[in-house]
Every structure is written in structure tokens, then in C-alpha cells.
Amino acid sequence: MNDIWFLSIFMILAGYLLGSIPTAYIVGRWVKGRDVRQYGSGTVSGSMVYEHIARWAVVPVGLFDVAKAAFPAWLALHWDLGMGVTVAVGIAASVGHNWPVFLNFTGERGLSAILGLLLVVFPMGIFWILVPLAIGYLIFKDSPPFALFSMVTLPLFVCFMGGSAILVWGAICMLVITIVKRLEANRRPLTADLKEKQLVLLRRLLLDRDIVSHQDWIDRQPESDVNIKKQ
Image (cartoon, rainbow, N blue to C red):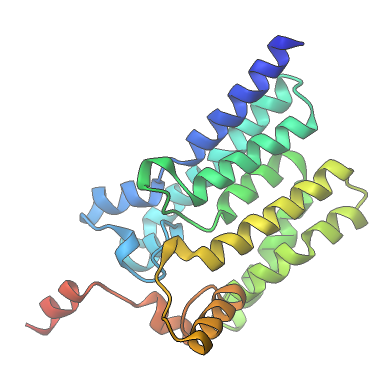
């Protein structure tokens, strides 16, 4: 029994540390010498690699970010640690993906890691998330609101499809992590004006950004880059 507890705790910690590997940051530095946190949404994400580093690089970044949660979750399941521990390991990887210890706790939104966990414990959930994302991106050119919809409804979908209580609670945890990360936004400062602060927080929650325009948000660049282009 003690060995199981030790291995379970070890796997949860390992899941967090593996999730903390900032793939997009590493690729941004390696390919163009850029810190992706200074561009667009400011997240250490495949989308910012796609927009500001190299479009081809989004594939290895995305696959590795999914694997960061899928692999430790699969190991926990393979070692018969139980569904509860398996979900906890994947959630820990998502937390690491959002708040990586190796990057001063500034990371992604955790969606890739969530997909990795779902791949192991509830594959149908992947389609529940990706289909709305595809609709938002291809039709409306604005996927974050659709991502929020899929996360809000994921616990209901898991329940409807006969998923266990552990999976339902896991989906709820994924939703909570998503909401907290959107609002926290890598500790991006808020204005002192109360009304404007409330509007920004609402935009962060619903749109995953501080302003209304999605294109203007993802096109943001450091002032130094803007000045170089003007010269």
C-alpha cells in the first residue's frame, strides 16, 4: 500500500514537471531567438509559435504538448494506479503547462495538455473540444469563445456518455483550471479603473483576451520590433 501511495505521488509530481516543459518558449528561442510571451496573447502556446515564429513548428510543439499529459497519464493507467490517480496525473500536467516552474509560472491555457489527458481516459472528449474549435476558427476566425463553450459543457457530455464520477470531476477540474488561467492571464496587469477592470476580466473569461479585436490581439509585438520595422 505504501508503495502505491509513493508511486502515485511521484507520478503526480512527474506529471507537473513534465507539463512544465515550455515547448513553445524553447522553439521560439531556438528558431528565431524570440520570447513568445512578448508576442500576441503572451501565452507560451502553439498558436503563438504559429503566428510569430514558424508555422511548421506548431506541429511538433502541439504534439509534444499533448504528449506531456498523455504519456504520464498512460503510465499511471498502465501501472494500475487507478483512474483517480490517472486523472490527477493528467491534471497535474495541465497545471504545469499553465504555470510552468521552469518559466516563472507563465505558460499556456492548458488545452493541449487537457487533450492529452482526454486521449488516455476519455477519447470522445477530444472531438467535443476540437469540433467547436474548428467551427470557431474556420467560420468565425475566433476560436477562444468556442473553446470555453466546449470546456463548460464537457462535464455534461462526459456524464451523458456514461463516464464515471471520477471523469466528471476531472472535467470540472479542467474547466476550473481553464477559467482561472484565463482570468489570471500570466499575471498581466489590470487597470486601476474599476469599470474597465471588470470589462477586461469579462473579455478574458469569454474571449481569452483583453481587447475586443482578436486579430489585433494576436498581432501584438514588442515595441522594439515595431520600431525596427519603422526604420
